[in-house]
Amino acid sequence: MLAALLFMPLATGLLMLILPADALRRMLLAATAAIHLALTGACFVHPPTPNGMLDPDALGLVFLGLSSLLFFMVSLYAVGYLREEGPGPRRDPRDNESFTNQPERRFCACLCFFLAAMTLVAGTRRLDVLWMGIGCTTLATAPLIYFHRHRRSLEATWKYLMICSVGIAMALLGNILLAFAFHVPGLPHSLHLADLLRAAPQAQPSWLKAAFIFLLVGYGTKMGLSPLHNWLPDAHSEAPSLVSALLSGALLNCAFLGILRAHQILLPAGLGEFSGGLLVFFGLVSMGTAMVFIVGMGHFKRLLAYSSVEHMGVLALGVGLGGNAVFGAMLHAVNHSLVKAMLFLLAGNILRHYHTTSSHDVRGMRSTMPLNAALWTAGFLAVAGSPPFGLFVSELSILQVMLQQERLVTACAYLAFLAAIFVGMSVPVLHMVQNAPPPGLHTRYRESLFNTGPPCVLCALVFMLGLYVPSWLTQCLQAAARALGG
Image (cartoon, rainbow, N blue to C red; front, side, top):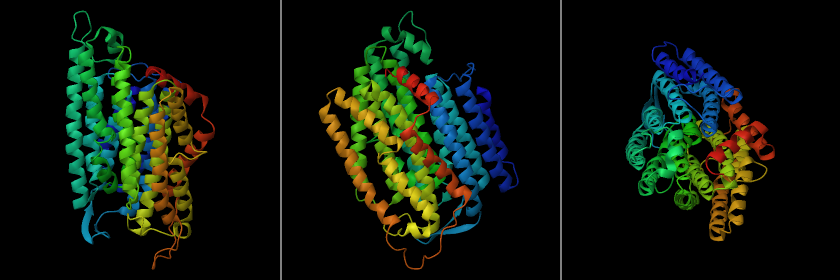
């Protein structure tokens, strides 16, 4: 089962490169995503037997399930999206510059390779293999960002490659320092998580601290923690919206998992306060940075990108606090992935209808695309942490732990950032939904099953998680939280 999860997308990606028909390629993409989701669901019901590099625990299964679910939703959306895009030259309405989309065979193949890389990251407990998997996600997603072969897309792609490559190099140094920390007579020379956790009390603390700093900075670059987030707004704004949904909803989680693995090792070594303190610090810095850029932002895709920076900060903050906040962080990771993927898919619909990414030029959505307008409003309320959506529950649980630990300064900063971000996002969102449509735009958007069905399902899931969390998901999140000291 585990081997099929990894090698099926790889084989499908190679097949994508030789298939002659685009329609057949889209069907195969959706079928691969459905099979992968079914196999992932089977892993939750019947825990799989370890198979070489793949040996997922509860924490890995959480992120594997998220990645598989989001990829399935995005694959359905891609059927309609790719059919409407089609080959041939196009003209960018923002600067009237012509460009040509990337060949669909390469795009679909890279999507499958990306799924395989995410499976490797979430399904392994070997830190060296995890590092290789995160590096593969960079290589697989770079062509996806450059789908619209435009000069701005090229700039965003190179920025993404350069910054994330530096981050991956620093994470490699972190792994080397981690090996030095366990270079003690009698300890196993292995980077498997189980061996490292058993030997952590005898490891060298100074090397462990240095290793965690390098891993935090290296994987934090890919995760989008401030001030290491510079690639994220450009990549999200220039990539196709379905790619942005995967970047924000799944790729950032893969990098976060790398940081969580390092934090896991420091806990039994008695260095949990050190790693937790750094996570709390970078979490607050990320939220503050996102707040500064969100207020007054007139580019709705960049607005969502900075919102991802904010929520990555919330995740780091929750894990750093420990206790019940770790469970809140795990629940928050699930909710954020679902709602951010929904919002980016909706942003793609808005961009196709209005031909602009400026929130100042988009207005009157309630009359030109009513279903999308309703989902866009619901997504804003959800991502801003409003009840009764799931992010309200997870953010409230993290706040509760701050108050229990009497971290009043941290709690005040946390609430202030959330309040300012809510106000900053509400202004452009309400402007886009309300008011009269721009002159010359009186046609209604053709809302089909492919472009609105996946966002509807994701919205329903986020709404459900605000009212009821299934017992199997609760047990899985609790097991993941216990692995992180929660």
